[in-house]
Amino acid sequence: MMTAYRSNGESVVLTVDKPWDALPPDVIWLDMSFPTKEEDIYAERLTGIEVPTREDLRDIEPSSRLYVDEHAVYLTGSLLCYADTPRPVLADVAFVLTPNCLVTVRYDDPRAFKLFATALCRVPGGIGSAHLALLKLMETITDRTAEILEHAELHGDELLQKIFGENGEQNRKRPPRALEKLLGGIAGHHRLVSKARGSLASLSRLMTFLYTVDAVQSDHNAKELARSISRDIQSLSEHANFISGNITFLLDASLGLINVEQNGIIKIFSIASVVLLPPTLVASIYGMNFKYMPELEWVSGYPSSLLLMIVSAIIPYFFFRWKGWL
Image (cartoon, rainbow, N blue to C red; front, side, top):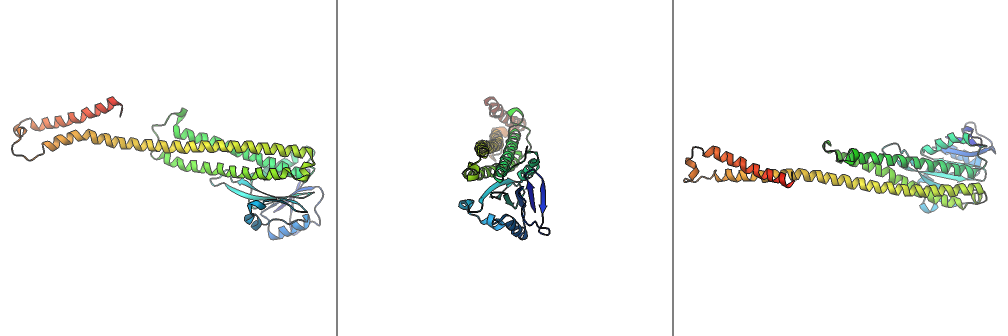
């Protein structure tokens, strides 16, 4: 689908069935979402540039993601998509900046594009240039990434509470294998934050390159906006690193508590074995098949042996309790 946005925020959906002869001068953004081959050709005729295809975005080398030719500035950034789902992904989006129009080509649906399209009509006086439209779009993408990281931090706090319980106190009534199940949640949390860090690294390179573009350098407001976005991306990268460190703590804490629980189970079996060892010894002694044993003729020999086994089990139990091993 192709959508043309005017400087005042109005949008028009373009179709190859009813093509425009030329791109109106007030159109500052041409958004191509999942474009077909026919739409690529149509967009190239309207803008006079070569539109990147799905194969171009998929096969592009990291060193060729940012370049300038005689007609336009080509930028490719990795944006975080489907952050609200269990499987977030990084989607490559092409930004082509021409003197009169910004062209975006994407084969995924980052939420920032919908937010930017909605906010266009609320910009006082509209957006008067293509490079300002690109910077405003990058600002929206950065704000969306900040929102994702804020939700990720809150989710990390929820995981921490599930691991340690209320007020940081370990929950002794935790269901069996609850910590093992939490490892899956920690893995999903790590996946989201790592994708966000990858997107921020890509955006940082893109903004550094965009800052050197002549159209931005010649516009004081655009230059200041680009500098502000770069600072925001840098601070968000540091925030993402902080959250990543917290994820490492969550993983270590979960594995540590799993080991504690397993050691507790092994301790119970070990103590039970030690407690039952003296009664077993008593039973083994009186189970010997010798003809002459003093206790064989005792009338109270059997209850005495039972009492001795019980006492020999109770003494180690209370000794372990006194030592704090139970």
